[in-house]
Length: 600
Image 1 (cartoon, one colour):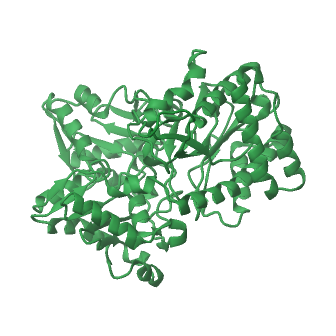
Image 2 (image 1 turned 120 degrees about the vertical axis):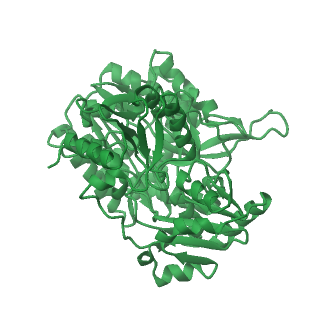
Image 3 (image 1 turned 180 degrees about the horizontal axis):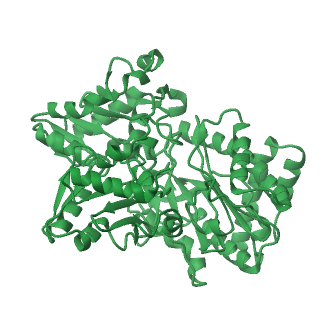
């Protein structure tokens, strides 16, 4: 087996053959995806890092890996400190580090299919002060030394039924055409895989946990669309579904087609379209309009069919999770269970529904100190036994044709300590503060993030990640543009106004390094809120909780809850019993009723 040190040495040798002194390796693909197919896992292959966000920079005599606060512990466990310097972002950016470390007059390479123009410009500016150059490569040097690199997936596309989508593809493409007309644009390039899946009502299997297909699409002013996808992925049912207004081409033809828009105004999302796309359009004589992908906001505001589908999926998923929570509470105290066996058991409960398509992300099954790693990923090497006295954190979700779920619960293995109960209850108070928030229409997610943190701040505590993310409708588990996050946490400030129909997670937490982690996560739907006595004409919004599963009562200190918080908790558990109870029987049902009985 080739070691990470040997891989780093091989890359440096390859860089020398390409007349490069360094190279930047991001964790993404040609679509700027968060989760990527195996063929694009260059960062993991090179460094051993298994997180979902990070970047590496390799120079002749040093190398660095950049991760945010979610991965501070994880990166040190998985990546050798002998070969790599650990750099925290956003405190230090890739561009800023290059400006301080790149050798004078050096040539630093980057793959233009893996970076946005803004990222390229920032790195180029950082290098300029040292007289160094940023060089676009025609071939990625990592691929040249990754000899067992997986091939891209050959999974078939499938049709996503109109009744689940809530609108047919023709209507969605007409919406895009109207958007183009309003901006006097001739076409828009869609590069985000979930945008293409949503616009064409198709799904795929090219990325683990996200039902999308490796593809590009160009939508014209009349709504006619060119879809670029490997020909073997299309069958007669998909061709019939797409119809004559969607012309299918080989994905390999996409780059060349970008040169056909001379004199045209072509929109390309500056955050989602890589630098190579904008460069190719301009080289062909097109004027690039740096506008946000028109699907992004439309996809984020769920229609009634998508909301109804999610409610059904969430109720089904909640029953599977409840069965699992009882299993943990009764079996794990006996010993013999591990993080991997627990994850496998939860997957089995979800698979027993008969309609699970996939997990919505790699399950975070974390006991004891592993729970303090917010995005911990259990492997055969890291797998730990679940022991008495620990807290067990399970963050997981399911992909169903009618909805995508994401939920986190914490279960004490035996009796929790007073400190654990205090921290858990403070996290719960923050969770309730978000769940019950009422705010003016147009409020940004960053403006309410502090609601979740105040109970922790009052005890001198905090958590180093955002409070909430958007979620797709049988699509990506992390979906923008909406988030709940303040500027000084990973991802920066959430500046997108919240709108009715948006779904978000509500997941404050607390992490004590080396001991335990706590996170309570439900999904929310943004809905209109009626406020008696409010200003006439001032539209207000609030949240409807969509996720239903017991919140560990043994972890709650009722003395820390206000009467209104206790009322919310009891009402929530009553609804859990109402929605989940009819799907259970026997000991599972009895356990649910006891776990959800009123407190206080």
